Image 1: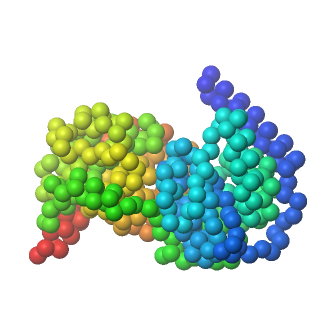
Image 2: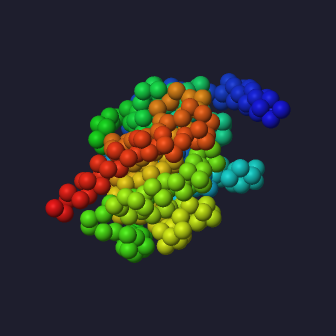
Image 3: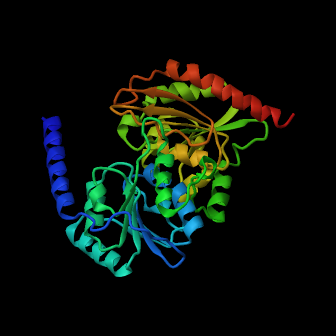
Length: 363
């Protein structure tokens, strides 16, 4: 019954969006324009942390090549990714309540933006309808069914063959630049205080001759929790290796972390996302089922072993961009069918490569 209800909801939403598009088409298409340091641009990316992180390579280059003042409209679940970001002038937080949305729309209109950019890879009804209602001259997005709402669109690269970071970066052609893959780097503002705090938390485990592995047990959804028993097996297996390990998690998942290791000192949680991100500077390798942490590791060039749910999609998995990684991927809706043995078969040679490399650096 729940699947039937979801199907009906999707159909209704599609009909509402189709009607909205028909009545809110952008009056002009493809006219020439140029962003300068005097231009004010609204960027929109809602949803989760990983969704926000993969937009930062494009944002960094948009600022670099145009000098425009960039304002971000984000979500309660990801706005802190853009907090104090050197390329972001200010951040608005989207809220669903009608009175809050009306107030937000009023504030955005008062800003007199020169352009708005939809950074979503897929169609967002919420964002599409908001952009359609805003009186902003230039409206840019990847080519989707919502294209009539926008003045400028660019063909969306094949999701089955192209990383999401490159798909987002394709927006750059609208604004007159075309970056090389080597220029696409995730960026985040992390203070010296956060780095110092992270280093202090990990100092006991950072040894010149031993690899420091971070095992992340938290994920964006329950479907990506690998299971307590399998994490216990993993920790016991790691304890026989010549390395140091820590277990990292969201503070709300600490109870799960405490269930997988008896050494409580190895459980690392942080009071803020900024400090959590800083941890990745000091580890040597990450094991994770979560794409947000995978992107944080890649930001610091750390190798990653990932567990991926690749269910009901043909899109390329969100692997760490321009970074060494290995992975186990399931086409099931969760990680339940990925056994400990299957993981170790692929993880062991990947891990040993970096254990050996760590030892070699001090010989």
